Amino acid sequence: MLVCHDLKFEIDPVAPPLSNGLRVIPVLFYVAVAGCAFFTAYFMIQKNASERARLAQERVTAEEKKKIAQIQMKYNELEGDVKKASSMIDWVKGSSPIQRLAMTINNSIVKTGESSIRSLKLSRTPESPWQIKMALTLNGSDAEYLNDTLDALATGPEKYKRFNPQRSLGENSVNYTATLIRHTEQGL
Amino acid sequence: MQLIHLKNLLTFASFRPEPADPAAAWSTRFPNKRTLLLNVNRNTVNWQVMLKGGNLGEGGTEEGSLQEVAEMYGDEWKGMTDDGWVSVSINNRFILSLESNLSRKKGYEEMLRTNPKTVLGSKFERGKVYAVRHHPETNSSLLLACEEVLVKETQVALKNADLQVGRLSCGLFAILTDVLYRLHDSADKEGENEVPSNYLVIAVCQGSVCVLKQSEGQWTELRSRSAYYEPGDLSSLRRILQPMLTDWYPQYPALFVSDDNDPTSLEQIRQMLPGYAISDVSSGDQLWSIIGKN
Image (cartoon, rainbow over all chains, first blue to last red; front, side, top):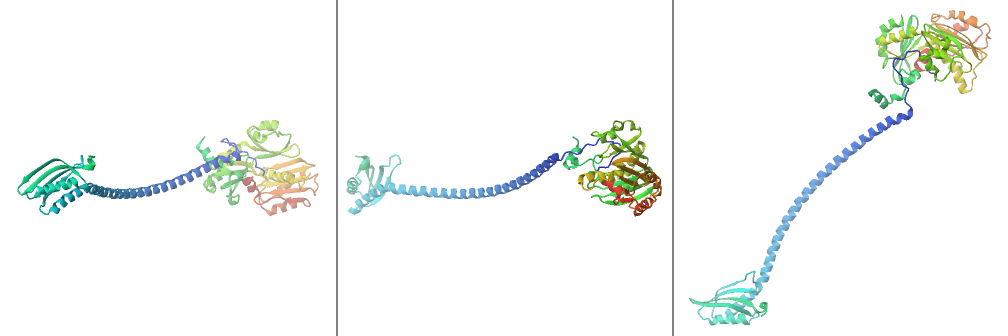
């Protein structure tokens, strides 16, 4: 195209237009702006999503903690029950020789039929569980019945030895205390 | 770097010619803006709005000097444009001449604007501004010399009306160079129509006239008058044409170009030169199309 001539006096210097190759600069700028906008929006969306996920996870964590606390409470209750059961088992296991001892004493008294037990106290200590302190009070003043009982203890299946025996006669009663040790436990 | 440069870079304005860039066509400077086209004659001023997309809008004519008319219509003109840019055609106080052996060194057009003496040599006259159109095949050139005072007055008058002069040209010279461009450069590129070795170009624009004759492939004669005839009455052209046709054969092509869209203009020329092969190469709104697009 023919460009028309121009006679005017220039007031301001006129710069020629930039080459088209430099159009890449504003294009890159707008691409960068668009990229920033896109990634900012993407970041915000991801941030909001992660925030929602975090809150949901916190809710789940709180519920799980609550469940854990409930389970822990039940576990503690169960542990208490287990302890009780264990102590019961221990008591039952521990009371077995006492029961046989009590049965031996009772059978020796019942066999004669002439006397009766006023009181019987059998006790052990944790420090020396093989020692049984016995405090027996029989009705009647005849010591023969006591001897039958002591013979039954010495000849019974447990074969108890007596240590520190003390006997005394009360008013229509015979009191006897001793420390019994099973023959097998003492290795005697 | 100033902020405006950054803004122009980001809006891609830096890749378009600046509004006052004389090396760029008007349509590329303002592709999507309304501008004003002005034609300044001795006693009248014509104007036309160039709309977005290159279509012409409303126009007008007013009697008086540019300074007087600009004072009256300055605000209206300003409102017709987007940024106040004006392309001005002056059809007064200029001289067209035929010269030879003018410098055609690279950058001569810019040198003609900044330091015309280096291009024109002894033909340079102080107080004139110049434009040139070279013959593409010979050492002949058309030289336009316009009074520097008139150019400055025009720029000042429009600046006072808060308008910005994007281009200041001579309408007749623009029409003539456009015809020569179509005749020579377009024909050379297409390779279809050969340039006739003898032709006559009769260009008229707002009362100014120029007749250029080529004989045997060379521009041999040129006659030009500014503010020579009354628009619509071309009878006075006879005094210019007759002396130029003494050695002219009627079958040689004669090209007529006019700015006024008046169908009677061609008839007047044909009555003046009966039997001559005269072709009208004018397009609609010839002047406005040239100064508003090229």
